[in-house]
Length: 109
Length: 114
Image (cartoon, rainbow over the protein chains, first blue to last red):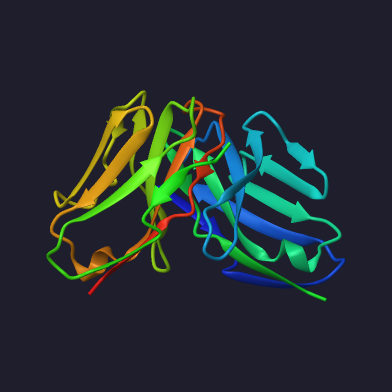
């Protein structure tokens, strides 16, 4: 059956370090993959999109990689700050847009 | 741009009552999505519309759930009769077109069925 897994429910990182979040999927052939940020009491907010033929995408301190052989995407936040604390969701687009369960990231000062 | 607007923000109702959730998508967006979020199951797609037409409702849990989009600026999700297991946060999202356009989410309706 189709499955999307984000490897950690929660991740605790020291301020200034790089946070790396993982999204793995099985039995999908997504055309592209998206990452969203969700703060408590709010809807998810779009961050980045990467296509199946792209290896890497960057936006300011954010970097996303997409390996269709490994069926995995990595999401990096460099020079992390307490304001980056939130839940991060990956979303696959095949016939429809399906979300992973999210990773709750905490950046401690 | 006001973003996607959902109402009400919170709804508390008794089991067996009808519940109607409302959504106003971003003007010019032609795809609309209803999602449900719970701790156990995460963010689940219930139904989506393209140009006001329902395309895939396979995520709608059962016949008690129905969704309509009478025009490009309004959609409703109705639960009748409601049950305690329907308690969740319901999100509406819109996008320019299904495809590479990102989803723009509202801030959700927190539904509690007692």
